[in-house]
Image (cartoon, rainbow, N blue to C red; front, top):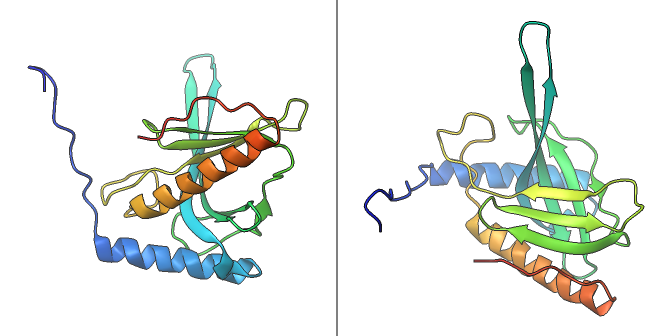
Length: 177
């Protein structure tokens, strides 16, 4: 370590509360998805920012979206279901169009996984922020530490990348760490 470098702080969280939230998310997923137990799940977030210039003040608004992401290795199917911060409500699940996905990538510094669609598709792709949150988190669901779930999801993405390469889609360099 250098003279001015700081040791990173360890994330503070309640393990029992974390496990309880994982069980709630599993129950929500199973209620909404047929054969829900055949999917591995994890919590993911997405953010959107909107900047507006005002006459006196400029405003920047950031919106956080919380999802349960379910994926299945048997048929490479990925579904998402938006949930509220209190884990009491959810939307109907929607599924990623896997026929349009040409690239899967991961940025370890920000814990972001991307599924990028082919050119000319309606949207760019799907982004999954799959980081951990501690007990002091202000803008998300607290106590969602999911190291094991994230590693399983990254294993799935590596297999998906291999499948995409076999289909002739060139993949960017993979960074896992």
